[in-house]
Length: 180
Ligand code: S3P
Image 1 (cartoon, rainbow, N blue to C red):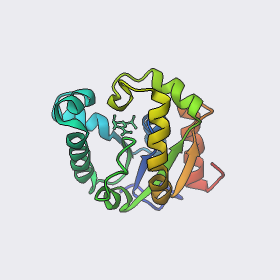
Image 2 (cartoon, rainbow, N blue to C red):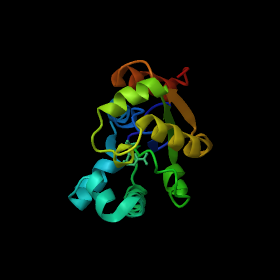
Image 3 (cartoon, rainbow, N blue to C red):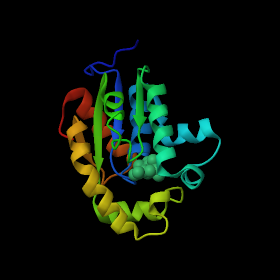
């Protein structure tokens, strides 16, 4: 195993709301560390052969959450990996040990205005279909924020900066313990 100097953990898991930059920042962070990168939504789509919206249509949110849990189980033994999770991965208590074990948990937070800007470009987010996106984002944040903060080891505000710049800042924080 290649130890990254200054970093004692074997896995980094990004948690946080939809459209807060988990996937784009996680991908750049993995490249900086020389680790693999996985996005649980993308892995679910690869395993099931259909997109997330279709899973929600056919199996509902409950079916999707079961698949999300199975994906986290499948990833649980893997090391030298950056994992971007879906915004609701924190909801199932059974997921918590899978997220935290041997991992450093990074919470991505974002201003509502920036989040809405990003969310408008996302087409494959069933929870945003058919309702007022701002209301959905407000409500999901309210129900999930205490879970996010309870699980997170560190938090990065992704409102300003490109995914690459934010990943560089996060990398420096994790390796050199600089401010994030
Ligand atoms: C969800 C977030 C999505 C995806 C699914 C449900 C949520 O992932 O897992 O649409 O419950 O917040 P992102 O956080 O990557 O958008």
